[in-house]
Length: 172
Image 1 (cartoon, rainbow, N blue to C red):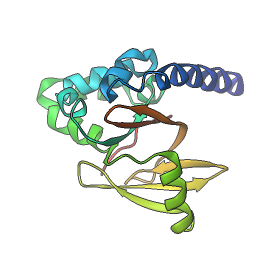
Image 2: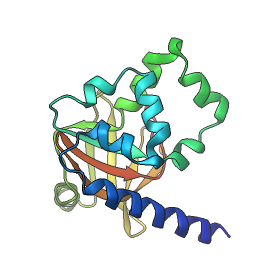
Image 3: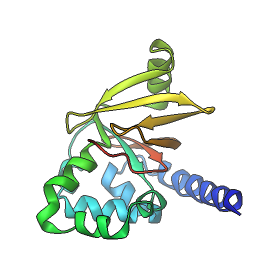
């Protein structure tokens, strides 16, 4: 049953991402808003007051978690993070998903080859995120040792690129 759910989720992610890829003239936020599976991410970006920043010139590389990734976070924790008094903490989590510059999949693969299967990325919040080859795919390893698979790459935007990930990565 889990395999069926995973396959269906993967197919829907690929379908939605393909639709978003056709919208290269849109910025990162416009694309996120146009994809239903990013609705939690968009809500979080608004709550953290990061929409304006990600509509900026960039370029940015965004590792964007899908709704099912956010659903793995305890709902009370997620709801608490979305409250105005937690804007700074939410902003730190979301900027942990963003790297300055435009890193296409080919750039990440080249860096992984040079780094023997692993490369550290400095996120906009100043913390490190590790991209690595694992189990036949490319994963992000967060500061807590948790992994998120990169499910779809190279959703091009006018101000950068989005890579779709399956889980939310968390800074320390």
